Image (tube, rainbow, N blue to C red; front, side, top):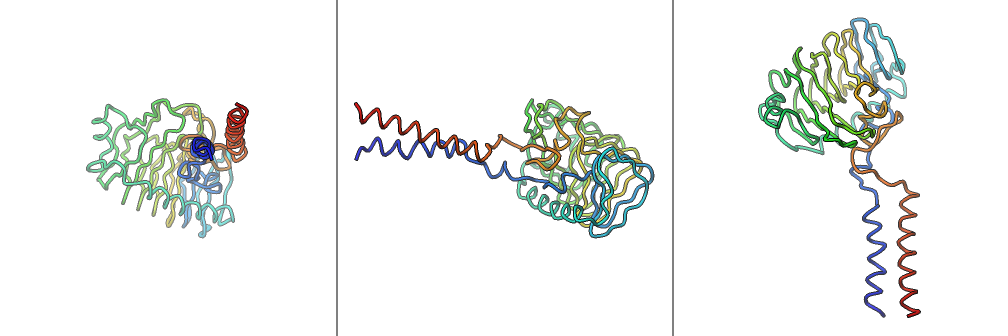
Length: 292
């Protein structure tokens, strides 16, 4: 038996399988298809000092208590519906997945402003652990994607997240793809006070939002408590920040079109064609060698 031919017989299909096979970490959805449809989700209810504007579903499960007044640009009320219940299951899974991505880079003292200043005035995609602080953010936080359309930021807060009334979050230099993601994984309470914020806030307990806060690309989801709003604007839509679709922060893609937070994964049919191509190439080479 020809040793070289045997090596080629194994190497070519293996090359294609490795080069084009699915990368499990990138292919796995983070938010899930049900949670992806929600702009606001509480486990023990949602309250509002009217009137908040919502771009996506707003709901609670298993507590069906939803109070206040809302204007929907998309979505609807979901008071302990099957969709809200499934979204809570998605939320639990998303929190587990995000926690497993850490600890990443430690932001000393929990001060996002100081960390940003020490890193050239912006924060690159990556995973960061942010300890508790009196205030985690007081100024403008710039998230710089470096031109990538698959940039993902994951901020892990073992306890609370607190932003001041002067804080803002700005996303810059991301491509036109729908794979950009910002995740604020908060162990306990999230308190948002600045005029603008971006990304998915997934909190263990209460999410309290100050008056007039705008999140035009993200969502608020509490796994054990309420979400409280005061005439805020919360939307899964991404048009004003330049993202490609309303699911632009969904790593892995839900029903609103989110993309993968990493290198694109070939569809199963595409993968099969690639492997088949490799086998054809191998067969031709061996046939030429036999004829010679």
